[in-house]
Length: 161
Image (cartoon, rainbow, N blue to C red):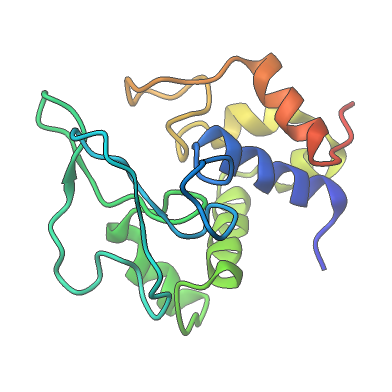
């Protein structure tokens, strides 16, 4: 069972990435595929594997040649999926599997203690290299201000301190 703060942090990431709060999701963001340059939202219904696992081409997301395979609540890139699927012994791309990957990413960033203790600024800074919507990354995409992330986190029951 995950702690209240970890669950709130995961929810914050989903909202920050625009998946769990998308008007197009039918499953709390777990079914969202990155919106491409067309601006048309897309979701998936087959959780048996990552949506790009069967050779689907990456989606162009800007006019500068940036393509993405980001999928699910945490916008997990396909290039990383086979590693985590094998390492974490995941059988599918279900919400439970997506959560396990996100928690593992937080651990790999060295942020799990900060998340658990409610040190949100430190946790965000450590995880910014993973999620493009978090401030402090170098992806050149739109990021959220800390105040917005704090509001998302508190809405989800997180304790800040």
